[in-house]
Image 1 (cartoon, rainbow, N blue to C red):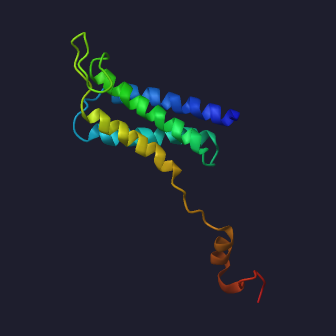
Image 2 (cartoon, rainbow, N blue to C red):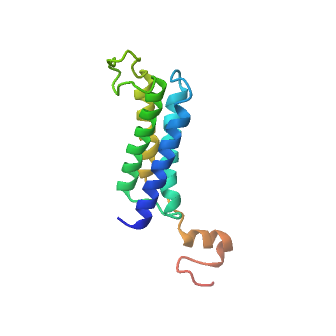
Image 3 (cartoon, one colour):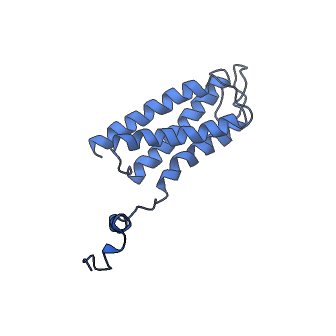
Length: 145
């Protein structure tokens, strides 16, 4: 684990914590929590990727960010349930309501939003960019005609 990974995870934790506070202010009904969960996942892994300075974070960092994003959504749903709710919708002993059912879908959205970063992206080949820039001046062996 490098220092960049550690700082990236710390930044991801901060985004998940703050995002949970913000999303906890809104009611958990309709499609807003699911969309917010997806954006939470993208934002949390984006914070870790920002620290990596343009490089893709290692897969284990992306998975850890997915867990942090799910935690942030759980925290938001917990606040929405009165800050005393239960994780799987069980009725708590103190009479405060359970977590809303859409919270589960929001947590799945957060995990998908974060784990989407694991999909390999197509990188542009620098040789293709050079060929497009100069047109047909170069042949297959990169020699002048």
